[in-house]
Length: 292
Image 1 (cartoon, rainbow, N blue to C red):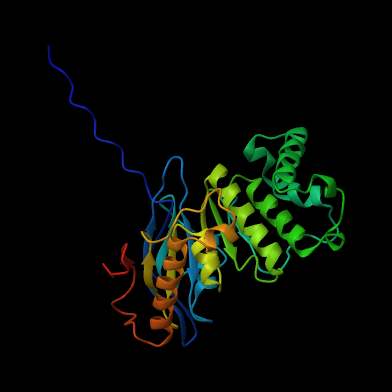
Image 2: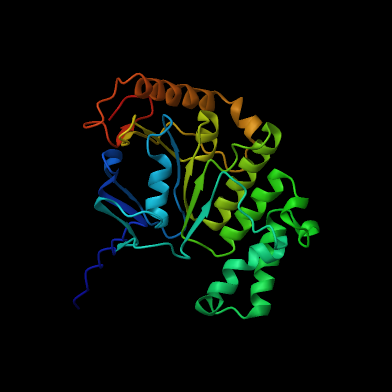
């Protein structure tokens, strides 16, 4: 009796991919020849944090993935399709509080559901129920009928997170989302984000200026070169897992401190111009800090 050979596993298309993407604004080049691929895992979205010198194109990269910008040359793809504009499969959270001032918390969280309800197969009752679940997830149930001006900064960012995740996006883009918050609230929001990501599994790209925040949040830390921006380092192995670990506890651990030191030193080399941007893109830092 002939047995069939086991079939080879089907390769999954990257959830996000850039192929030699360059962005120019007139004579100014913001991003130069960016290439990367973020694996599409069935039960786990990667969390990438992005740091680099000011003005090096970090936010420009988020805008490319979000569909707010088109590359001057090259392309950016989501699930194998070129990005031609914004979509409900991608959520965006900005540094500035972005809630609609005339809408309550629940109305803000429901905003995208109302627009895409038919596509999502949700009637009005189902939309309200899902919004309520996410308002509960981010700890705002008692504030659901308040307006943005009645909320603190941290509460407003909780609204933004709920409004994005209620759409169940494959990709969440965050542009310095906690930079305007006081330190205790910032740490609280970092822990909340890690908890939600571990349960919902979107791929996340988060721009930050804080090395410790980048190490706490990310599985991978990208360090951008001076403008024109490229990925100088893709640091993976040394980054310790932090799911279920409060930020202040994580910061006291030896592995965390070593990762912060490694990332800081790599950032310093980039800032000092010791990295050749034409050769360094995507360099992976291994477990002892060696570039691979």
